[in-house]
Image (cartoon, rainbow, N blue to C red; front, side, top):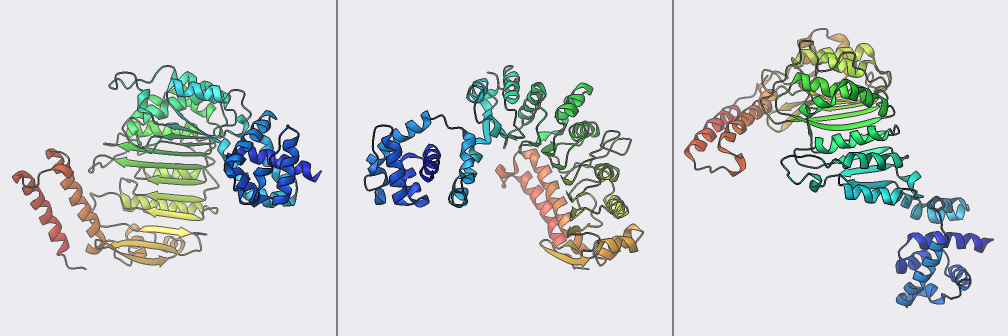
Amino acid sequence: MHHEKLVYILRLVLKYLILSSTAVYLIKLISLSTARGVITKYSQGAGFKLPCVVRPAFQNSLRGARKLVELIDMIFAEGLQVSDFGKVRLLSKDHNARFGGHFWDRTQVFKTIRVKLLPGNINKLIAAIEGSEVLPYLQHATISAGQVWYSRSRRDEKLDPEVVPLLAKAFSILTSLKTIDVEVNNGTNAIGFWKPTIDAIIAAGTKNIETINGPIAAIQMSKFKPLATAKLLRDYKTTFCNLKTLKIQTSVQIENPTATTHFWSIIAAMGTKLEDLTVKNSRVCFKDDPTPSKSSSYQCEGFSLPELKRLKLVDVAITSGDLKALLGNSDGIESISIAECRMPNEKDDWFEVLRYLRSERFPQLNSLYLAMSACYDEVSYELPKFSVEGDWMTEDCSVTLPSGKRANYVWKKNLWSELGKHKTVDKFWNSVTDKKWKSKQATRWKRRRLINDGWKLEMRRFGDPDYIDDDDPWVREVNDRYQGKLDLIDAEVDD
């Protein structure tokens, strides 16, 4: 019986390891004498002997490799199932100790597939997975960029009409699929990968997707407008009823409140079970100063994410009311991270948000990070960064405020107590920054950045700032003018 167990193990091991290196691996895992006896006994049943396979140090590795080829062919003929692979650990404590670290993680190779939006590539995927024993293990799909998926004229940027139906067929076969990554690292047509992927998921009727990671190449916010029709919003709500994690990157040139509202309406439709939301935005225009719609909101009416636990926003245009809607309908908020988000009146709006956090308590909240300064046109003050790990009602908060170009003020404050003591905006900010938030030191970095952004914007009249001839008199005049402004700031005497 002992030999039968080892034969079973060896069959599995030899199936998943590479020829000549396999034998070396076996010597590390089982004793030489046992391996010799088992392999010899097992191979004799097939009409040949393998004494060379288990010689010490495998001096005759080539002959050993040839014999292993024959043995592996025989093993493949046995029709072993992938599901047998992990059962090795269940044979005994000894097997678990020997094989757990070496082989258990190897089953991960069956969990991930990568596909390009090309009909030929998707057809190959369908042929490979249809009826395959690995289907229960395929849980992760990466949609990767392949520029050749465009029609012959790149100017049209039209997707091959076969792609979405084929991808939908693949998704309908992949019944265990839970995670989808849309992998586009650069370029301006990220929506061209996002939309067909989402369309295919909807067409497949699969409802088991739990995680979607959008492309690193940001999707232009305006591209979401045609995706927010009443029918599509119903489809999102039905299809993504089990979605728990959504990470997406967007970009704007000049914030359009209507386009942003369409974006948030899609998030709401997909987010009935959403627990983890990350939205990172980037801005093309340095001077973009977004203004919300007449309703003083960027979100659709009745916006709600009732299961939300973790929220991360970067450079998103938002109002205090929007943040309340994001956070206020969930009882289980655990983590909030917000950096450089554009508020209409940041010092007042952030104070309102902080007071709201205190009034609602959020007892599950154990990680809070707020980098509140984003409005570069406002240079009369600078808001700090707040960071709390642990129970935010009792733990001290790290308060960080710029001091000059590179240094920082750092204080420890109890944010809960500070909000309880100070009922007006300026008194609160004075207290948490020891009255430094309006000092020259605190606003110096912001004022320098504003000047640098203005310089970049003006230099774009001459072309790419990295490739401009500095000897051009017009360029020299612009450089001198902005450098003079920076010199004045650097010459200031600290308060």
